[in-house]
Amino acid sequence: MSSGRSSSRGNISEDEINELISKLQALLPSSRRRGSGQASTTKLLKETCSYIKSLHREVDDLSDRLSDLMSTMDHNSPGAEIIRSILRS
Amino acid sequence: MRGPNNAASSSTSKGGGAMAAFKQDLLRNLLLGLRARTAEAACPFDAMSLQERKRAVKCSADVAMAAAAPRRASATGGRARWPKAILAAAAAASSSSHSPSGTCKVRKSACKCKRVARRRVDAKRIRGYAAASCDVARRLVRRRTMALRKVIPGGNAAMDDAALLRETMDYVVHLRAQVDVLRRISAAVQISTSLRDPSQSMAQL
Image (cartoon, rainbow over all chains, first blue to last red):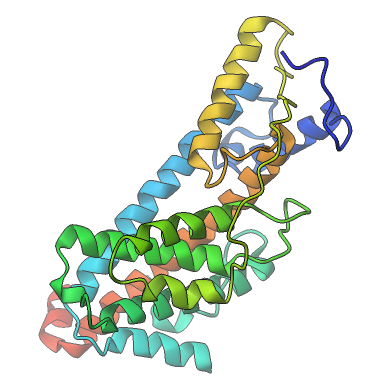
């Protein structure tokens, strides 16, 4: 597909990509379980996608919980005030 | 479960030192954003429907994360794109609603760029490095790469695959921190709410 072209920044080496991929692998939660065996690129990319999606879901759930909690508080938000005073100290 | 005292001080995740500052900024931004929204006279928090409220909190969390992201990205070595993409999307969304203050307050200090420069798409693709160089492997990798671009904010912009990988790493690290901050703030609010109502806290014991 792209073998003929080169970007204006010069060619990106395979080594660089491989290094990035292994760094990415280190970030994923599965790397702690299975050790650092060489996983295939496609599996890694797929796992990264799933991981990001699960993080998004977690953010959604936590935001939902937070908005529920906030609706039970009055506008002065004493909870937020507590946190702000912690930040100040 | 940790109490509110630990909300701002501890940094338990990997690379905790650098992320601690980000988490504090995120927390601060989030409180600013939420406070702006709850104080909004035109569309007060309580008057929103449940769905609108949830969307508002989620948007505040994302804007807070994007605004707290360091200008000089750590993993990418250049500037990460995802914060700008988030802020641009949030601005587009809020311009059609009547409560932009939550977004603007935080965004003003963060993003000066209005337009993302579009370059020609350079086709530096990830080849199937761990697989034989056959078309099937390449096509699979390509499909996975496209899927990844969809979940990363701004991933569809022109960038080669190496940049995409760096962007992904940076985004994942900050996303995890966002989850951490949201967890702590939820716990803190929950505890403070129950403190105000002693009968509730008794029920929890």
